[in-house]
Length: 209
Image (cartoon, rainbow, N blue to C red; front, side, top):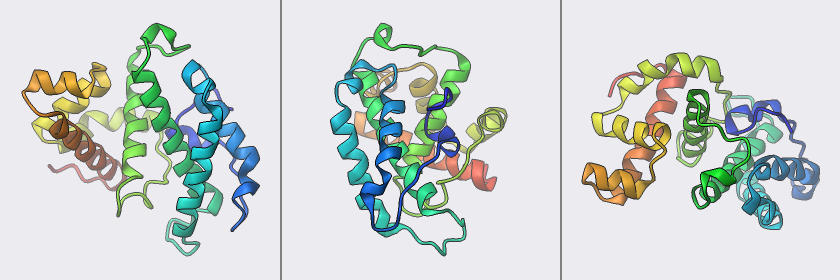
């Protein structure tokens, strides 16, 4: 486990798996579960469920691996990014359901907010067709932080507002919806669209709305 944790740091974590042998990833899955459960008591009590989720993710995504893909990603890299994103999505759900004081080591610093935005960006992009294979990528925290002000310009006013309220102010969808006079569904839609836009802008330099 690395002290720098989350989907955007996944490139630093070894993940070993053999083709057509999901159980060969057992050691790596254990390491991933320990990492994502660290500092979150509800997840510490749900490790068996996290192991199951990791293996389901492996089974679902292994057939999608293309060794001839232009990214040149290995099977381990391909699967690791998806397992990591899926598990950290579960952590995000768990963290939203418990008091802030119950979370170990989560500091409300600007760096942490940028990290949370990057985690959301990576996880969301990997769930979208046409983006996920490109975004098994390596997002560098410092470069992303430097580029973020310009990247935000690619978003519409509503998208930018939702991103800032969600990741910078820590508001939940229902709170954002109430303040903006939108439905929760519309807020979720704007959030997803914004994250995909940010991912494309960061990777390909697309900065137009």
